[in-house]
Length: 176
Image (cartoon, rainbow, N blue to C red):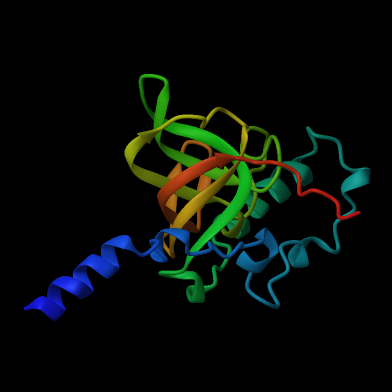
């Protein structure tokens, strides 16, 4: 019994190693399965020669949306604990805090047409309201990835993320 109490006291006095566990960074290009080319079916089309009102441009945009909404994802990300930098698009709010949002790789994604491919949109959800998640705010999002397609008002997400925390994005400091 004394040994058990000593062990418990040592554990309580020791620094929390789990709390300091590093979050590996996921880069956006890693979310695209190897070999998938989002522009493969459009190599024969000269977009510069098309006007926005041209029926060929409208048909190409509709075809692009179908292909990008069905973009493949990498199942290896399912259950992966990581962090990713991106821009937020709030979906669900509780006051001035957010519980559900999209993460996209570049400023303006999903607000402009077409939205990125599904493998470049992450549907993030938090069990508690989060501060600092504003429209197109650059943030780090930390959590566990899932491979689950969801259709939102801004586009089709190919990945999900159960959010643990968010933090403002800061440019990496250059080494001197």
